[in-house]
Image (cartoon, rainbow, N blue to C red; front, side, top):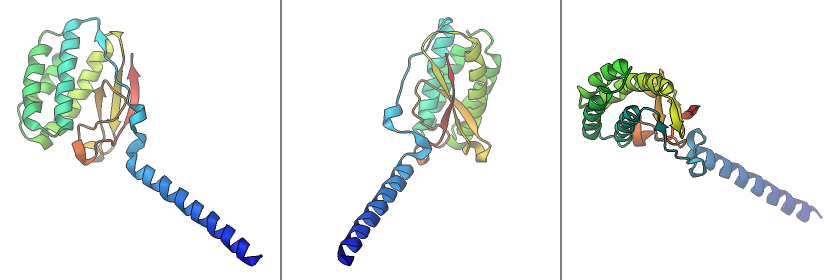
Length: 177
């Protein structure tokens, strides 16, 4: 009788340990609660086509930072600047992007991207989407733990402030529709 109870306890204990290990492994893999099932990409369309074109280049800048490619980020920022000149109310974004485009140093670009993103968020919120949605995302560890926002077309976090070092660090703070 004692042997059956011991075997039963060992089975229960083994099952419990296995479940805990799986939970810990999943938590480590799924930093910030982001997994492939949450991947949702939208295509946002703005009433102002010029703002839409500028936003598309903002995304190219962001994606270059996600890829940790300073050269591509600078090239995209140069094009982004040109497009912003034709967008009504874009002076603040243009000023922030001009500073961003003046450096080829990835760490500096990432610091300056916060200001670009903040100003772009203000601009797109006033730009009235005609369809789709944008996601305002946030990483609390960016910029020396000051935190920073960025815009994205997808819910899945791809952090431009850390790239592959902490790709999934962050969360969606707002859906802009």
